[in-house]
Image (cartoon, rainbow, N blue to C red):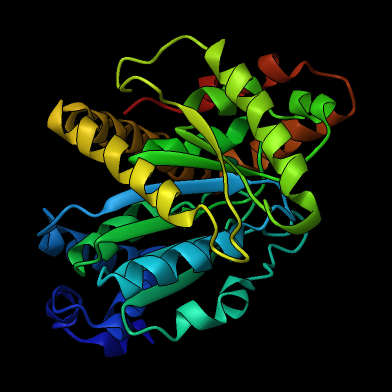
Length: 329
């Protein structure tokens, strides 16, 4: 129960207590109005964070080995003495809202490490592959003193670019594939990827992985250079999450890129822009929730929705009619 957390939750989070961090994330994810008020108070007490963790977003199609990669990277960093938090966003059913939430089970070794924290959260059908409160959960992990926050997201596609709006770096994982499957990756997600990692570069797939990596490297050279990148980025690399081959090199490139961006002020400017975008996003969502909280508005919205579904009213006209009925205050 959230009510049992007590007034010392902020202190416990700041002390790095993992149980307190889990409780705090549960609080910010709650949909109850009273819980939301408590969550906002907690976030205010914890801001600004005592340190900035490196925020890394990871995405890839199902079966590419995201969880295996995250666990392998997390264990390597934890063994180096870094505190690692993993926010694993699982897909939710569009029908029931249910979620698999299996990442903690798949990352069994990492979940037992004393320097690691894993939190699976349902996406709740939210576009962008991130849960609505993932941004706030990331801030809580920073307040708890974690050095690295890995956000493992749902699927891969155009809407997946939302994860870049809460990350310092974005890593796209792909599997060894035939050359024509390069077309299956959206250009938009390639344009925001800082590293494209061809996973499963081991055994019989190693040669295929190297070929796939070469094709992606060639494709990246045709993209417009980005101001926030040093020479050579974005880049494609091969890695084996299974045996760890290439993992130290990947981490070395991640650190080099992050340090360059920090040194040139890009990371600070990027975080400022991200905070503004999430502020505006909260305003938009809050306005919709307040408008639809009115019973008459909800009923009219349902009626207009029926007319749209029946083809008797164009969606844009229906939306305009509803908005005209909402009084300006």
